[in-house]
Image (cartoon, rainbow, N blue to C red; front, top):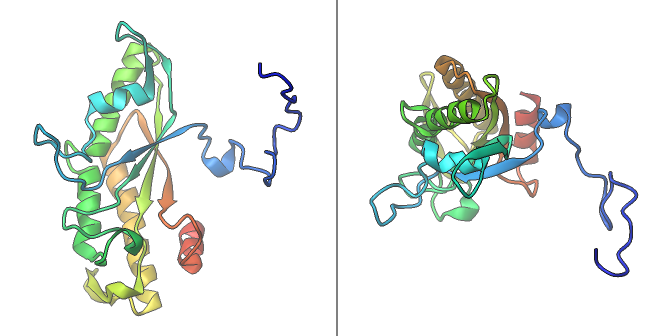
Length: 220
């Protein structure tokens, strides 16, 4: 204990701040989230994608591993998959790239997450291992997946459901966002995971720009 430390008596409010969000319905029951950067960040010295997540890479985030390599307890109860760049070099929001994303970038990220052997499949395998090691057959980890920004600068975006979308048109932005979010839900449900629960979607622009899109996403 530090000398002269003051007892914290109001656990719902931090000093010089407003009330902060407590675990509950608005958080999907999530307590602790780890951030898994799973976009395209090149390859490592072994030729593996830096943004690829294997079951082994997930393991110490899901369970506390002791010095003998044995899982002793749970760690984070949720994973947030975040792709900053696509394989085509475009950023999922323009602050991160000089070029705007197109439909192929959005599709690349969905495939990376949900293709066989992709990042969510491997999260399921890691969670299955955690359930076995902890002797908790009902163990589940919650999943949050990032949603790109539909930026007007993208212009002609691509064809969705037989319609060519252009992000200079606000309604087209909403159509693309709705398609993308529904793709996440549909692809996730099609997998039938036993140990991964889709808990939410993450909005890239935390500072609040594109507020109408953020509201559309929240209402959806």
